[in-house]
Length: 345
Image (cartoon, rainbow, N blue to C red; front, side, top):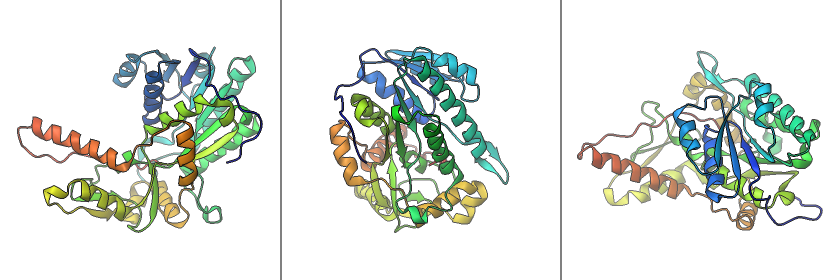
């Protein structure tokens, strides 16, 4: 990643208004919470349903205002972006599961992206908006082996191209996360994560870059601390780079005193493609090319931006602690927690 020009090292002015789209999504929630904790900004949490339980929970946070807005409704975005200084934008390809299609619909995400970027441009032309942060997805480690890429990857990359086409690249920071730790939480029978099983979608010896979804909020907060340096930049972001076997061994070490053997279990590719074809394509892509986050460069940037990435070890420890608390509340009755299949990255 190259840097050019003269950089202003101070962050955006205190009490700047930051709009967060899809605020009740996993990414959006993490961003809103992280920014609220800084107590520096006014956060406009944009959501389709301001009366949902997730929205109400966000609305209780410091400096957070709930605003109704929908990426499929450009006029609602126009109103939600009125008077903002910064916009964090993310999109989703998920549109309800259907047989032979799954839940990933590329055209649905593309429409959201075009609506979002058009309204960001409109807000920028009004004169107050000065920074746009877009959440995309990591580019390939080996570009020559990029194709075929999953549809829910190419949709985000095409939205990135549209950002440049409409002239917003100079005010835009693109964050490109890899697979979420949270995607290990699934309900697929026989492949649910437990002390005995660590499930995955790639072979046990393939390196697989992953990140905690809440860390996207840390990156947004970090970029806002040096906005002029990170505008017109794109960063592949990750927290870990481990093989499936290494992940399973990490969990094994955490429970070593219990005498339980943890095994890495790969979900059969044919089953993945039957349930969610695009995720199967993604698994092929990870094995063939892989995510392209430069882990050494990231360490330097994280230090500069005061970002402490969540380790998979700490994430697993937290899950085990929650599980143990639940087990205690059930008066010693054991119940394996249910983890949901949603390999959306």
